[in-house]
Image 1 (cartoon, rainbow, N blue to C red):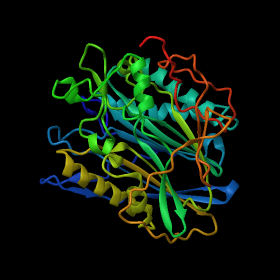
Image 2 (image 1 turned 30 degrees about the vertical axis):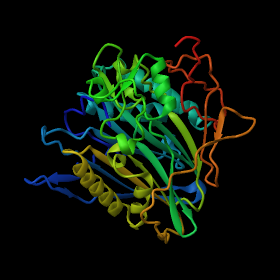
Image 3 (image 1 turned 90 degrees about the vertical axis):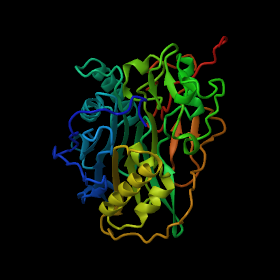
Length: 425
């Protein structure tokens, strides 16, 4: 879900892997607007240090926009094998552009973020520091580029595989999810948390930076702007809370973090990533990286269940894209762009599919992050998957600043700028 002006036009984005191969758009429309998906490719990469084989498939599909039938796909993705020549480090990322120049922003960030991260010599010793530096540097370069990012930008959801550990960096409302086997069942664990005004912490942060947080109906006077209770994304997804300048009807972003969006940056939209870590175990059969076009009407649990029904990730990509497309048209007159990467995690000498019984009809939410006693700024996810996240202790930092603490060990993560307690509202 992008800015209120919607996602705009340009050429089809070129998404790349380490060989710079181009992936073509995987779908067409008939004269009746029906959607036909083509097969996506199946690739693999090895992680020798932990005897792993990662089999993955990617699908990107242009949205359906009846008012602008030639509107392009503003999503892009990048898969980079063997970071810094290391056979045990691999990158998977999805970038969801928005605004008039969203395609240019998406592709610029895709290329520069990966390049900066690849050249950072601190990556092995402190991937969190490298991630933060890369996002902030990319954001600054985009501001200074020839691309007009005043009302355009991109979200980014990225997964860096380092041996048996995943580092997940998120800016915006796309999502990464990992599957966890629980006996003969499977449960979805979110590796990222959508950065939108639905989140109380993000909502309060941008308000302190001067943003008005209102839905379109509230801005237009159809609903009481004094009622700042929006429920959740499932009930209010059609008219979500958005960010506006104090005396204007712009920019209307439905996210609180992005790369680019220099106008929205003045009211608190930042490029600081939230970074989480998960150490892989035999109970992790696969993970998913996808744009919000997938998750607008499908829960993480539903997507994981759909992936588990297919031994081939290509089939799962097609099924999920088709279901997302169908649900979009059931709820709205258009669809969003859809991009999904599915990565199966297999032992190198035991690459057979795992038998999993899907818990149908459920929408299981992952356990809430709990504060560990004695470490008020550290959040530890319960359970064997060791999903970790921590907040920087920067209570004197202004919430609009993009500087982050980088003097932490690699086990510590920086999900958000601290929100100070002002004496006067």
